Structures are given as C-alpha cells and as structure tokens.
Image (cartoon, rainbow, N blue to C red; front, top):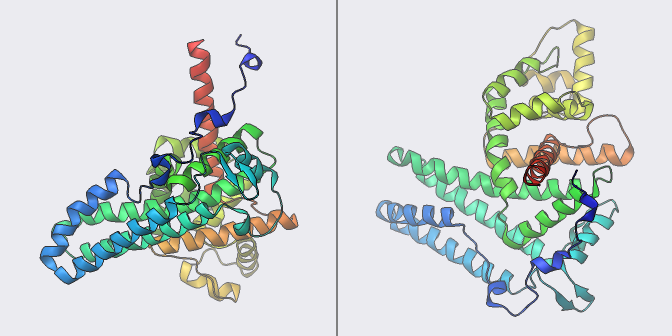
Length: 357
C-alpha cells in the first residue's frame, strides 16, 4: 500500500514566481481568448448596423482594458511581496483566509486587488450583457447572441463562485486540505477572474436554473420530487451523481427545496402548514404571496441579475441560520454542489495516484 505520509512537504510558494518586478505580473487579461474572439466577430456586425452604437461598445471595451491595466499595477497575489504590514506570500494569504473566522462582512480584510478585480468583472458582465441585448434583436445573428449570453452568465458565475469559495473556506467541518484548495482557487480567481471550476459548474447551474423556471413546483405537498426528477432527466452525469449521492443529506434536501420553490426554508414551512390546515392540495407560483401574507418573488426571469439576486438571498439566509444555530439549510445548493465537485475531483486524483503506483 502507498504510504501517503512519506511524501515530501513542498512549500506552495515554490510554485509561484518570487520576482515582483516581472512583466508578466504587470499584465491582466481582461478578456479570455474566447471572449476576445466573440468581440472581434461582433464589432464589424454592429458597425455595419449602427456605427454610433459600435463606437459606444468600442469605448466600453477600451475602458475595461484601461481598468485592467490599472489593477495590474497592484501587487500580485501569487508572488512574494514586502508590504507595509510585512511580508505577504500566497501561503500567508491562504492561512489568513482559513484562520479568519469572524462573522460579518469581510470586504476590508480582503486584498485590494481582489476588490478591484471584482469591480472589473461586474463591469465586464454588464458590457457583455449590453452587447448581447443589442445583437439578440437581429434574428440572423441568433447563434452569436447565444454565445454572448453564455459569456455574460459565465462572468456572473465567477462572482457567485467567489462567494461559494469564501463560504466553504470558513466551514470548519470541511477537511483542511479542501479548505486550503478552495483558498488557493480563490487566489487564482482573484488574480485572473477566470476560474476552471466556474467554467465547469456554470453550464450545469444555468441548465438547472432554466429547467427550474419552466417547471411548476407542487406548492401543496411542497415536496418538489417530480420537479427534481424532471430537472435531473435533462442534466449531465455529474448532476445526476450529485442527486444520487447527496439528496439523503437533510441540508442538501432543504437547500434544493429553496432553490426549486424560490422561497426560504421558513416560508416553505409556513406555506406547507397553511395549505395543510386549509385542506388546499396545491397552488400556483402567483398565489404564494397571497397565502403567506407578504410579497415574495417566488419566480424570476432568466436574466443573470435575477439568478445572482435570488442566490444572494439564499446565501444570506443560510449564513444567518448558521450564525444563530437555527433549523434549515446552512449552505446554498451552489455550496453543496461545488463541494461535491471538489470531492469528486479529489477522489479521481487519489484513484489516479494509486493506479500509477
């Protein structure tokens, strides 16, 4: 049997360039190759249709590039730096993320480059959304519009994944090697604002979101079983594996119900009780607010802002329950799913290691 404890410990800093003056550290790729290719394909079309609109889009892209250059002047998160507060390395940043367990907003504890990069990502998301909304009105460019929409959503999911990483890093019930891996992924995300996990997870969650909106949850039994099965039938193997392996977990089930029904765990319990008392078998989404006696947005469009807004409501509710030790999900469905993906990847790596040995 392979003795894992015999592996030599390697400092994470050895994987990164210690030269803080390297030209590479002064660059930031605002657009991925795919995004730049899309922009290059789109701009001649917009120019032919509406030169003034094309000029606006061109100026916005140039603004993003200028913002990217300004952010690149801040110290890299993947290199060693001598700062006013002392030496900062990738390892010290990871340790800080793991050790900091205080409640409340962590904005002022995060590196400046992370905060600035987030602003750049939001601006890029809005820019791609604006170009998509213009192109989608031209039927002959339907395929291009779909690609622009996908990139808009991909940028939004990078914002969402940042939140999920921060949530999982703070979860002391998780193995320390997982938490360190998420912390490293977070540094890479902050440095480049492109993340392999978000690219892998985004299409799955986007498909679940679209499928969820097309379905009519059974606001009566409030079980959502049929909806879950219908969604799963349209999904890939990774989602199906997640459902099979994790739906027995109470927290996952509760988070899934919140996701499906579009209302909080507490509202689900209240609605379930009201309908049972009144002997009403089922109601539609548009009747939820009336029965709860308060305005709730049980439905939402396919707009990227809707997705993120509904996610943040579930996130904030989960954090509050965890802090106050209340019943209900202490994580979002997105937390559970990305945690599952990490577990699967780690298991695959371990299997590959044992197979080679």
